[in-house]
Amino acid sequence: MGIFAQDFKDAVIHPTLTQIDQWSPATEALLLGTAAIMSNLGSTLHTEQDNRQYGIYLTDKKTHRKVWDEYLAFDCDLASKVRGFASQRLFLVDPEQELVTNLAYATAIAWATYRISTKNLPQDPTNLPALAQCWFDHYPHANINLAQQEKTIEYFVTNMQLMNQMPPGQPLLVA
Image 1: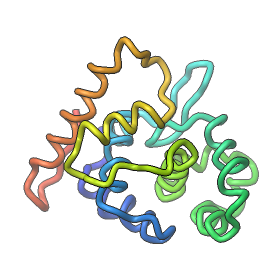
Image 2 (image 1 turned 90 degrees about the vertical axis):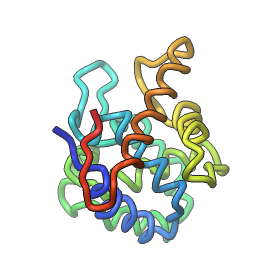
Image 3 (image 1 turned 30 degrees about the horizontal axis):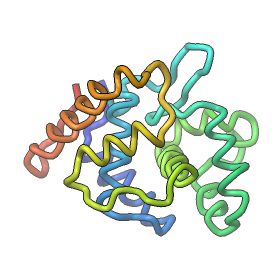
Image 4 (image 1 turned 30 degrees about the vertical axis):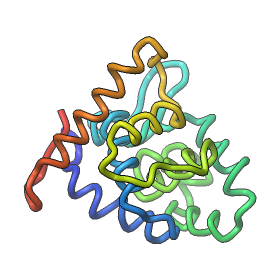
């Protein structure tokens, strides 16, 4: 069982993006869709394959380190805000574990993963195919090749449509 989509959006994604001054409806939708397609909103919090992935966004160690080394290292204010989400001890001992146990930190890292790859995130939260294409093109995902692209993008769009159709206040688990 994963996290209720509306709760995750309202209690984690929105406040995290707001705290790092990066909130927009489209970015919020992109991150919700990313968590839904990567981990079924937390049904899977890590993978056991060679390139292990961590947390609700299933971020791998290489990507996590790249975010810090190639993006956050060059923006001290943003790096401080993102580091502020992490715990004092665990981050120093096992930084990837923060991606599993800390939803705000994982969300900030997922957002930064997109920003490393593109400065032009989709602007329309209702353009689900554009959000799905952005995810496919700019977010690392294991075991999905170009031959599976159309099916995977359709799955992303379908999940987002299901989440968007639920009335406010009624939780939805992505299946």
